[in-house]
Image (cartoon, rainbow, N blue to C red; front, side):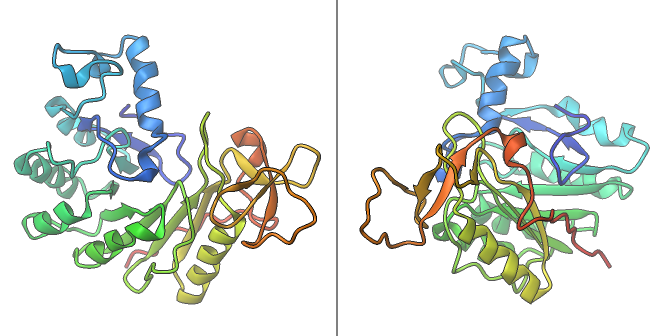
Amino acid sequence: MSDRSTIEWTEATWNPTTGCDQVSPGCDNCYALTLAKRLKAMGNPKYQDDGDPRTSGPGFALTLHKDELALPYRWKSPRVIFVNSMSDLFHPEVPDQFIEDVFQVMADTPRHTYQVLTKRSQRLVKLATRLPWPENIWMGVSVETDRYCFRVDHLSEVPSVIRFVSAEPLLGELPSLSLDAIDWVIAGGESGANARPMHPSWVFDLRDRCLESDTAFFFKQWGAWTPRDDDNAVLVVNDGTFVAEPDSTPIPGSPILMRRVSKSEAGRELEGRTWDQMPKVG
């Protein structure tokens, strides 16, 4: 998992650690866990059981891969690199020294741009003063519902040149989200077998607030649910729940018809256009 990426907002992935644990609702249908199961079945050595009970099943226990540290040095052409697409660098089981080693590799390779994303924002803040922060390191946090906007408060304390928020999967509106210290917002709905719908009002509000604050906005995908008015559509209200049997009684919560489709069919357009803005450096 250390090569060219199909993720729309990056070019390559680099996984000096793999494996993770659930910490909030955005983890419920973790794509990395699903992918790890597939990679285990394919015989990928990074996702095999090692006798530890924590690694039974998909082989997704937190694992360090020290041999991966040298990889960015070997990439001679500049790349935009998502760090730890299959893990969280600030997971409590990653030693402080290993995190420092990863950051040193990033600092040593200024030709690349690194995108680091975490849900463990408290640990990020604790370690921030021990880490180098050259302009090629972009630091971000995941925020799926308003309850987790505190991660952005922590991020604002970090001396990264570019700070970003990944609101994917977006599972609710984010009225408490402050964009004052944020350079970039990525938003997207959930995909996969158990995907939850993203009410359009949530993402429209994010986009509009980004436009007002001159924050770069990137819409990654609708996911498995898209606004669609047809016989197979169901009503979704703005708390993300479905209306099981609608009748003539007025329904509060801005209900909208949505239908489950494939990720590719749902697409990436908002009101007829794509949003692929990237943050400005310098």
